[in-house]
Image (cartoon, rainbow, N blue to C red; front, side, top):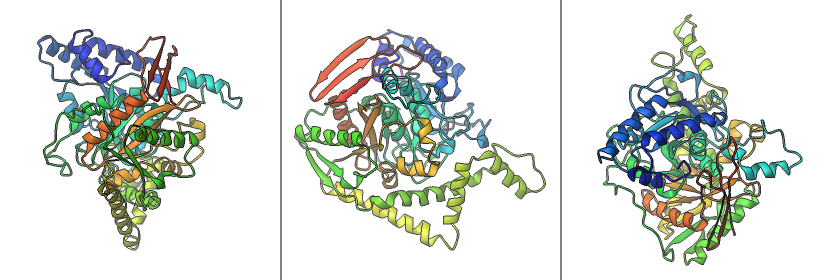
Length: 537
């Protein structure tokens, strides 16, 4: 049951095959067994069981609230949750309990979802590995898969098991690990430069970033207001569409949400014919750092569309080379502004120094923020200085417009969807990841994802295959603004072709064969999660 998709479990609940309480208890039990992954900061056991009890009553009375009623979900710990500690994985907010729910959290609860807990992240979502939070790094569940362990044993240079675990990607690594380890069926992440799609690719999940303005940001503790978007992590595209249907829509508390009528729910039609589609392949995304395995899968995915009749063309996004630098300037500038609210006066951490207000401010922020956050604040304040404002911030805003226009021009030329890599490579071991500093790593890992945030477009990462090391690799689809349904429909078709199947817990072995794809699933019974392997041929 834990290995099923959200839609399958919803059907099982409606048919009485399992009750919400039984499902909740199974997930809570697995959360305890996989505690070593460090996916959760707070486990809201009592809250979840109470919600499950209420859901059970609704099902008995034939008053189900919909597909999400009784479904266990997790929420990244930078979304406000009423009565539940919200820390952003920082000393600055340790012990902070919001008096209200973020809009997206409230919408999920209104649909009857069960909140299992708050998930781990990089401090204030600043990072691409989920390694820099005050509660420690998140371990990728795939570190404990049978296929990866076997490959690792064949490597004479492999370190000992305790230290050779893999990063999840970030900054929504806790949410990705929670879904990947089967402790919940969907999770909320945030996506500012790829923070949902990056961990989705590394953990073998679907990671969806909606169009900016489609989903409310109210209650999401801001990193970069003009780019932040609540993200969705699930095991399949259909599940992402179900969650999006619950979340999308205008919010009077968020003036950036669109007020045009939204077609809800986001039902995805089965796309049988792709011959009318035009798929764009951005030539600037073929960078030297891209691993040969990812490049090969990217090429095979394009060939798959072409073989099924779609038009596949090379396109140009000419300002791509400037996007990382542009993103850094704008990101740190907004960070400097947003972090100013954490002064020790209104909420969160306050130091014991009372010599003066200024001394208290300085000491509070020094104790409350880690080096990464302080570094971004310093950079942002430098770019916002009067003598630098025009040369850095204003110029970056102009480049951002050029980057956004690149996408507009491509889509206006007849392209329906762009196909790109999500990450440069598979997940890397933690010890290798920390050889580079946070700033360098983020620049490398966000190369394919952050331009989408600057343009406000929808994007989704889809798992396509396992690497030679037995680790998942994802590819990214980018759509037109507010054409989220079309994007997910294409992604669903592609997902069906590659047959990325997550096993049901306890199954011994299955072979799946489809056109162009062969799946071979093997279960590894251990303290680690059940995982699947497959290859695109």
